[in-house]
Picture 1: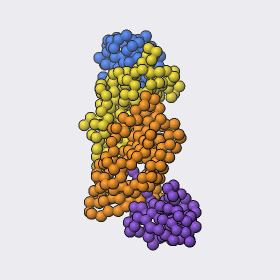
Picture 2: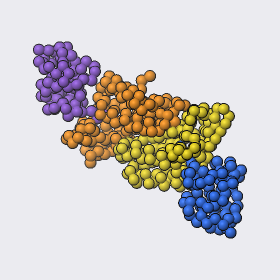
Picture 3: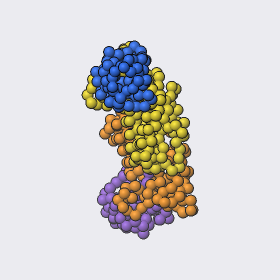
Picture 4: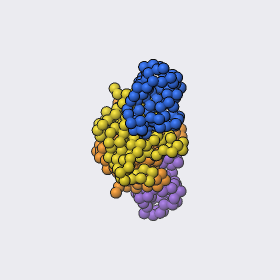
Length: 153
Length: 153
Length: 80
Length: 80
């Protein structure tokens, strides 16, 4: 089944969690990225995500397959929102079920780190002052390029 | 409010998640320990947890306070089951909301690691063959003491 | 001699066949009391990650015990 | 000369004022084409973590482009 999807409506976190139930799994780790009310000293009002579906999904599946194999986890899934999001909305959900917690934590962290820099997804921040702007990637910010920073985390 | 509780009934994961909503938070990490169907080569049928409430709660609150301060996270909560649990049941839930995902992952991992070795909680495994036994702590197993291993993770 | 109440948990309670008992002891420390009660809980050395609480608070094995104390003996824990 | 279809995303689409266009080009590589179109997307160097896809698959900047290719130009991504 598809382990990566793009959603135009609120992410159904409980349904996702329940769909991953597995009696071989002893550890389950979830990461959720929430829309924060501030970024880089500016007050954020809402976010807008643009997603290029075909490659976001195929590259996302590749990331999950590679991570599952590398860390021997049982299952992993990810959902990313697109369109307009309000403060507090869940922008991205990543769940990993594994035999033990070590692998679950490492794999979940690896998947969200790669989602943020590898998938063709772009974020526009709309500020309280009426301005708006595209946010550039985390890696660029880390490398000192003159870009913004991430509003979710 | 109390950030640590002991529950004799199934952990309400979605209600816990929703209770942690905070527009200052950009990253939210959850760990769940699930009852696995096998341990150390034996088929497990169910688990039984014994909890000494007063100190499990006070020590748990101490762990959460220390971890929140150390890593600057916004909020953290933990719930542990007691009594009889069936395969697939959630035995422990730890949620951490933070500004960024780095702190959320590190703090969540630290809290579950400490819960497993510091709180007065004991686990008895009931095996498919009718046998049962108390499971000794992870740290003991790691140090090579002649103890069992953890069924959840 | 001091009189203390000892509580046993989990494996220790099963082995001791009781949840608590009142004990007359000359032990100075929690570790000494633990050794004195080896016939109940069956464990030679508390440093195998057993824990002790005295009067409602976690304690150290070399903490002193006093007349009237309530001493909780915890076998190695296994939460999560 | 080759004829390729170029698609612009996010920031690049805003700057170019269009989502796609057909381009006549003599560029050999995706990087060369990117440079040729700087007046559209406004970015000097794709190595600032821009990405490119050719005919539905992620590609490298030095990959060749051929007549009839569909080339997708991605500004730095920011998922999550």
